[in-house]
Length: 335
Image 1: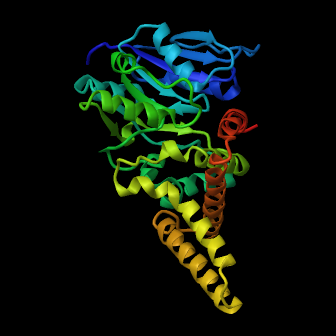
Image 2 (image 1 turned 120 degrees about the horizontal axis):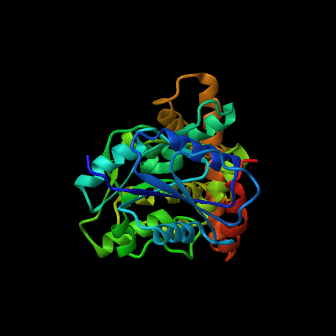
Image 3 (image 1 turned 45 degrees about the vertical axis):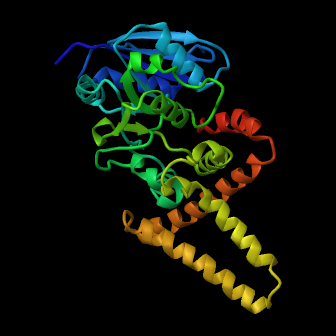
C-alpha cells in the first residue's frame, strides 16, 4: 500500500461537543497517514482531548461551508482530501478503503452512505427512515443506507474523498451558495473534464447525527427553496422527481377550487390523497416492518413533502437567500 497523505477537512461553526466526538473517533482509523483541519467561525474555550494525529485549527469568521472547505484544502498540502461534517464520525476503515479506490482512480470523486448514530431517539430514527423513502430523497435515497456500489450523479459533501489536485484544479466549491454546493461543484467538474466520475460504495460509510423532527422539516423547506439548482434539466427523468411535492400541492388546490359538485369534489380529493398514501406505503414497506414505525414514517414523509413544497413556493418570493443563511444554519444545530 502506498503512503499518500489525507487532509480531512471539517467545517463547523465552533468547537462543539459533536465535533470533539468526531475528532476522537479518528484516533481509531486503521490508516494513519493523515491530519485533520477544522475550519471554524470562532474558537470557544472547550478543551480538545489528546489525539494521536496532527490537528490544524483555522478561524475564518462567518463564512459558507464551501469557503471553509476550500480554505482548509488550500492551506495545507496533501495528496488526498476528505470531507466530513462536524456532527458525524467515520468508520475505522474509512480512510483505508478510500485510499484503495483513489490509488487506482485519480479522476474519481468517491463517497458512501451516512447512517444514524447508534442509540438515536425514536423520532430521529423515524426521520432517517423517512429520508430513505423515494418520496423524500428520490432516486438518490441509496445514500441513506448501505446500498450496492454504483456510479452516480453526485454525492453529499458530508462524506467525500478525492485527489487534492482534482479538487483545486477544477476550482473547488462555489463559496457563494449555502445549499447544494456538492451537486453544483460535481456538475461543474464533469463539464470541465468528462473523465471525472462519481463513485458510491457502502465501504465508505459514516455515522451522521439525525435532526430532530422540527429541524428535519426546516431542512426540507430549505432544500425546496433551492429547487432550481436541485433539478438538472439536461438529465434523465428521475431528476425531475423534486417537482412532485409541488405538483401534488397544486393538484390539491386545483381540486379544491374547481367548480363541481361538492360530493364529487370530496370523492376526487379522497381518492387522490388515498392513491398517494398507498404509493408511499408500498415504498416504505420494503424496508420497515413494524406497524408503529410505518405509521410514523408515513406521517413524516407527508410533512416533509409539505415543507418541501412550501420551500418551492418561497423560491418565487425572493427571500431564498434569507432562508438559506438564517434558518438553515440554525437547523444544523440539534440543541
